[in-house]
Every structure is written in structure tokens, then in C-alpha cells.
Image (cartoon, rainbow, N blue to C red):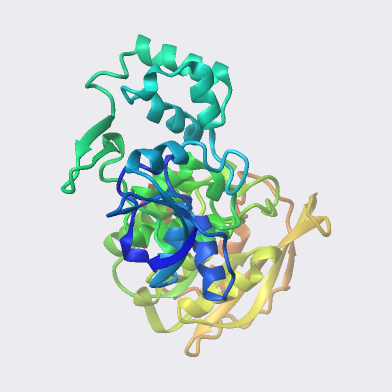
Length: 423
């Protein structure tokens, strides 16, 4: 019999949920569909004369609540809370959102933990739970051998304030949820189907969840831990820059450790194989403008795939793009669209700051690539010194000290450290 009842009357706290946990991505999808008027099959509840115990349709009920529904159509069956539990262990065995292996195991454990149902044969429990006889037999043996039925189990029975008996998994006490903003970002990613990754994400504060999810969604991080490393590294960059650099500089030279996501178009192989990279947004947010004089010039290295990001960095640091030099590396590197043999050295200014030298240098410099990954020839630093001999100079993301320059950046091996020159 189908009835329309208030959502608030449906009990979901009686241990009738046979899944390990709800899939919040599915709940989001259901809620959106319901808000658009999509009609779902009615959830199943058992009515004991006082309470409506939910037995099947936990995702639909959660979606209804998220969609701010007040009532819902349900299929009502007369029965007790235990009847609802018994019904739930076999729900979704052949329809609905596919159960995970852990969901199936939880259904079997629910019956094996019960004094009455545990007396049933493996065949009967398997039939009720929609699993194989072998699964039940193996789990029963495992539980007996490891004494999972004793008081050490993470599953605990308790009496509710209404006098009903329910169970809780104490191993999940305190477990948080993934905020909707992060779930929306991850919806199309592999992480959405990876319980281990989602478990790591739950442990984070909401703001960090969204940041991590954003990095994964854009391909700038391969997983939760990789995203955490990116965030931590970027914070260290900002902190050490603020702590180690003082004064104002009129000449800025920067070779950022660009993050290429999954493209690998950084010359040869992924940049991450050689040094820790930074996201374009975080490079933009570095407080470089605080260390720049009213009239200043910026020389910024960029590659073809990331020209747009480089222009955003120029703007973020308070400069205006003017022109560029091209480094012809002579040697070719494989790319998706052509054989890449050049990089750009973009020139931008703040205020008015034309070169002190009247000598015009070629915009294309042909120098064979040597040295470490992404290392730039000394020629370009010397070129800048010729153009602005009296300017106060700061090199960002430097790999070593240089006379006449204040330098800050990475040591050999990629460990972040502040290195200061004599200038």
C-alpha cells in the first residue's frame, strides 16, 4: 500500500540501513532530479503501529530531505523494526544502486551478529542477503576465528530512547561528510568511486576539501594526498617569501615551477618528476607586488601551453605585458601539436621603466639547451643586467645564488629554501 507521509515520521536510526554508508554523489543527483520534478519509485517502510521504519530507499529519502521535501510517497508494509532489518539486507541485490562488496558483507554481518538469525543455515542467510553460500560460510568462519562476535567488535548494540534495539559502528564515530561543493567538483573524477580517497577527504576541514577537490577536478593533482602536497608546498612558498624578502626591487626575474596537470607539455616528461610544481592561481597570489618599486620591470619565463596562465600571473603581480624574447633551444622536444624547441621570456612593466641601455638585442636567441630540467641559460640573466645595470634585482624561484641579485627559490633537488645573494 502506498501512502504519502511526512518525511519527519520516517525512522532511519534503527539499524535498518544495510549499506556501509550512503553515496553522497548519488544523493546529490537524486535531490537535483527531485527538484526538477522527476518521480522516483516509493521507498519501503515497515509500520509497527507507532513508527515507520525505513527498509529500502535510503538514498531516495536523503535526496528528498536535501531537496527540502516535506512529504514523500512510500510503500507501507505492516511489520516491526526487525522485519525492516531483514528486508533491508536483501534490498538492492538485483536492482537500484549497485551494492559494494563491503555493503554485501555488512548485510551478512547483520544477520550473523543476531542471536536468532545467526542460527540460520549459511544457505538461508545467503538467500536473504543475495550473496553466495561461500561468502556466508567464509565470513562466519572468519568471525569465529577472530572473535568478532565478542565485545571487541566495532559493531555495538544499544537501546534507543524509544526502547528499540539498534546497532552502531563505533569505528566510524566522528566520521565527517564531504561538503556539497567538493562533491560537485569530484562528480566526474575517478576519486568519486574510490572509497579510500573519499575517506581521506572526509578528514579535512570543508574549505580544504573544496581546495583539494578543485585541484583534482582540474587535473592539477592526481589524488587527495597529491593535492595536499600542492597546497602545503604553495603555503610554504608564500610564507618563506614574506619572511625572507625585504625591501623594494625594480627588476624581477622569475622562472615559476608551472604545473602542467596531465598534459606533460613541459619540455620532456612531467615537471613533477624533476621538482615540485605550483598551480597558476597560487603563483598569481604570491605577494610579489609588495616587493616592487613604483617603476619596475618583470621578466617571466613561460611555455606555449601556459601562455594564458603567465599573462594572469603578470596581471596578478601588478604588471602590464609589453613584449617578449624567444629562446630557441635548437634541440627539439615532443609535443601534442608540434615539435617544441622554444620558450618565451615575457617582459612586463609597472609604471614607466624602459631599458637604461640603448642597445637593441635580438628578440630570438638561439642557444642549445643544456643543464637540468627547465634550467635557463646564464645568457638571459646577463642580458637583463645589460638592459638594467643599476636596477635593484630580485630573482624568484632561483636555483642558486647570483652576485648582484637577491635570490629566493629552490635548491638543487627541489627542497624549498631561501637563498640570498650579496645584492
